[in-house]
Length: 318
Image (cartoon, rainbow, N blue to C red; front, side):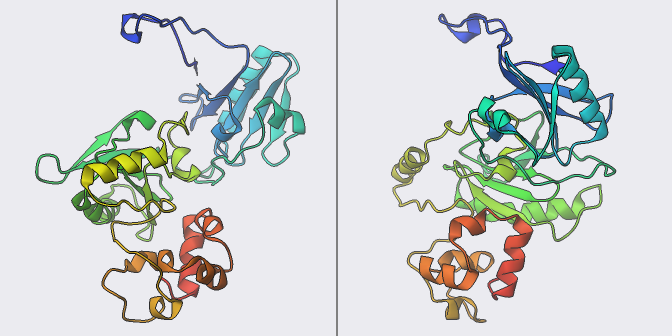
């Protein structure tokens, strides 16, 4: 099955809506665990839409190219090949890491994409699951959202994404402290009670709206990088809350802090009360961070979660 974006307009789309057919150039993501559930879905025509766990078919007026992600399955590759042969008698096949220049040029240039392999071909596939945490009723409630997309991320709440290898806690810009403080406890209880066996050491990563890493956005299909203006949404939230909002790298918690703290204090046994013990590295000055961690903050937060954890442990910051 192949699913394209667009379709016929209706009264619900407004007076200026128009029919959207199949474009001359498009990108199809092929994913699934078997011949029975493999499907091809049109994604944004950009290199950022690629995912190492799947196959993609790139169609332009001049070329038809099949891209094999390193983590793609045999069934996905066969389906991608079949689709490509239906478009061209001589499609081109490329493996991840061996792309030719014209492949990136067709997509508008090489960009960062979801490149963390989370599944093996012989592993049981557990699709990502999204949960909404809210205390709008006065008590914390948890509700699963099925067939989710970026539009389902509610800025007034905290969302939990189970991505198998990581549990992401997404803080909407208008989420409150109770929701933020409870999310880690709820995530741990979820891992313990999950019917399929889960690693108790599965990392729980806290991220902020508008500052999501590719390892998070890669589970939402087509992701609109321009949906939220980070400066605007946090300025509005600060005005609504009548309090300053700190925008960092997107991996902070609900703990408040200002200024930097020396490494000698952060690596010691007794921490200041306002320090979140799970995020000690955030309190280092830029200079101390470079000296202690051996890299800039941006590079550190681009590492896989397990590498971040191991590095922090080696520096007595975990």
